[in-house]
Length: 67
Image (cartoon, rainbow, N blue to C red; front, side):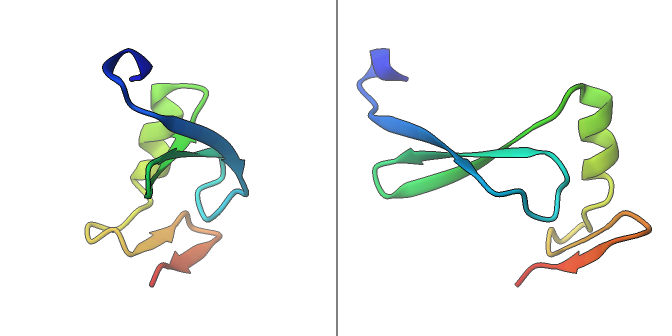
């Protein structure tokens, strides 16, 4: 991205409802959250706990509704 002239910053942020490492990429005044997993399988398992609308997460022992 830097070669294309974009200026960005990647910062550590606290975990939220997805139990993995989360980073935030800031590009100008926009932010993109990045979730890091140990494997594709782990990512697929966790993403299957997010409802179709993307507003809630439930893994059987924890449920969160995102407003």
